[in-house]
Length: 391
Image 1 (cartoon, rainbow, N blue to C red):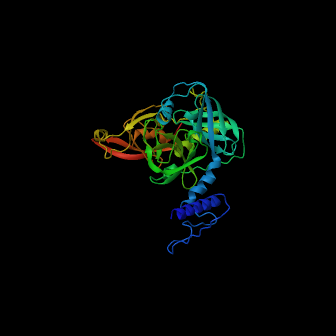
Image 2: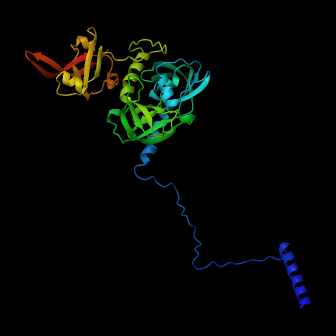
Image 3: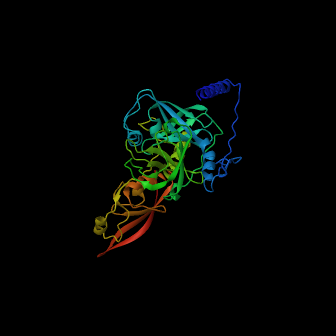
């Protein structure tokens, strides 16, 4: 038995050596059980699967709009405090740009001959502005119009036959309506984000023209100056980034285009020599033509209405009128109540500057007013319209 065991051990070792050296090859055949399937657990489909209905519109919008969105980079040499510093603190953090720092923002092409719109806080104090188009070509830009009150700026580059954005109607936007933001957050070119309109006419303490669209489309530093687009591909606002220094997400703000359009029209007309404008002490460039009526107002309260024996407490109570102003020349006086500007009802004094900005300079403004008139022992309330020309 010992000899047999030794022989078997010797033969097993020899076989192992022969298999290891390749002299002998062993082929195993494994037969799977009947329940095992040899087919793959995935399915290959040739070509590209179509997007679900309703989502393809975002692809088409991005393809159509992106060529008109630009990157704006600046070199900041000086930092002087000004009213627009609110936007840097509110939107992009408390620290001002350092000397010689490169700053990135966004913009959009206003006209095919090279006018570009953006935020004023993107280009303020810049010694050099460079606009990079969607085709990656770069152009030196000149600041031809800037206004810290609206935080809007107009640039000019030497280029032609450029793609432009159509203007939509921000008045018709509804809360919950889908929108798209395009820009260059953190220098990432041509970034597209989508969301909805979260609120309209949002007051955030930004100045006299405090009238913002709130959206949950992702907006970050670098998006400032880029367009907010509706489902028709029209620009409905200029993104002004998000709340800074907070953990809050999905709260961004855009300047509505019913503020943007009149300002841009005025700024382009001034830049082309079609209209005169004052020189801004802030920018030493063309400033916006802010509308002037020559009156002071306050929001009508319930106490005001009771004191004046008014039947309604909605509107703006006139507290002062300059007799040599458009308002004075039109016959307005103290204690009149403005209830409508054009066809828009107005109930808050904070919204008056933004409403006036939507009116083209030199055009007539129709005001619906409530007038209290004393007739003997009775004081009666009557309504009327006043036409005046905003300056």
